[in-house]
Length: 412
Image 1 (tube, rainbow, N blue to C red):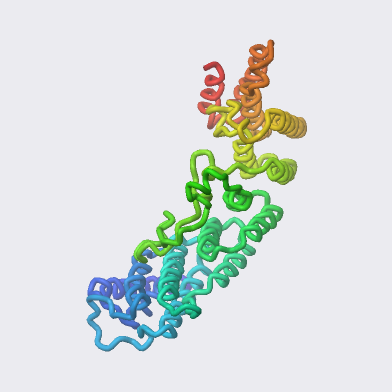
Image 2: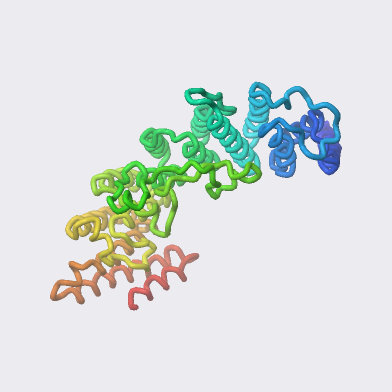
């Protein structure tokens, strides 16, 4: 009986799919067709072609209420009117469909992308209507961004590592200009709940430079004060696709470069606090790589290198921001921490790899080079690092080639 029920369901799904795709080919943009598409999407939300079908239906009606080109149906359904109430009802109906799909598959690429597209379009429409409004007047938004943040909070309480939801949250925060200190506190809560949360650590690395950025006089004179120009340019995540670039451009400090966030270095006090937080993760779960990757980013903030174990470690580029003693003392403290962890977990890969990289940084520091025996001390530090890389080739044989290259680079 169960097999027969599944067979009937599959047959119904196939029939509905065929009907809907035929209607899309015929450019039928009516309520019945969209209702059929919605039923299929509730069964299988990864059919991005049907989300695109709904975009073709929604966009002209939300923008100006006009009927889509090729609409072969007669009078428009009442909810297609250009009045704000009709548009708002249409948006809420679509948001409910998306939520129903996310309940069945909270990690659906196509579903999250469709919600991002819809919210970006609503934001763009609201911004343009607000610009046309008389001074002092207000226009109700088609979509409440605070509700979107609340939805993200709810979903992340169910699965704190849903990276689709984290990405969407960052998108909503940029649009809503939400309080970044509150967002930073949110990442802290999620990290303390589960240290193995790549998305929370990553979001933190984007938030900290923005929260702590200090604009230089030169930047102010050049006009780069970190403010969003509000052009509605696409932020590169595809949310503006089909919506005329409805996504606001991220502030300059959010734009990534090879060294992290453009032109922003964290204050030493903030770095110290972050190092304390990440050490809690080390001692709790020394084999979990998410905290170690965040630690590598913190070290790049300290010394100004790429922190991949081979490029520019200890070159002294961090001296422009921090004093040599400040950098050297913190490097020494991180070395001691890794050594302590390895005493407890001698076969742990990540503290071993991090220690090797830290020793490389120390070998290239100006203080070591300036000593009369600097060459000998640097050679000793590199020798220790090389020994660790050799041990890692046995411990993590799947990446043996990487460790051999890192050891060979010590000789160059």
